[in-house]
Length: 94
Picture 1 (spheres, rainbow, N blue to C red):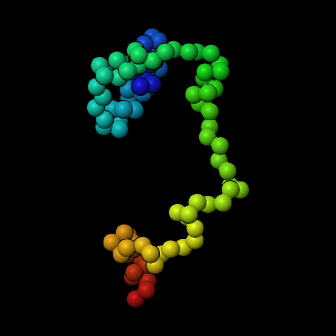
Picture 2 (cartoon, helix red, strand yellow):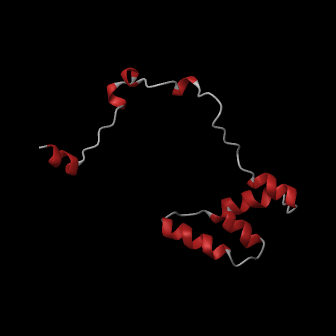
Picture 3 (cartoon, rainbow, N blue to C red):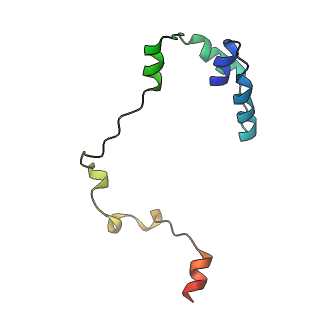
């Protein structure tokens, strides 16, 4: 969408995003994206830009929710436990 917004603003930096998309191996349907971007209301005021790019507050002083309350390894079904084979550690243990 960034590339399409830049194209509509006649900005050559859109090429950078197009190259990144190509390197990532994605196919983009320009018509659909152009239609979505065309429906957006353009607001270039500083307040609108700040609101769009505002970071979400991160808090470390609030207690964790119930889903993170302590270690519940015994309650995890065995099919959800992932075991990775580390050949270096395995060879060192012998």
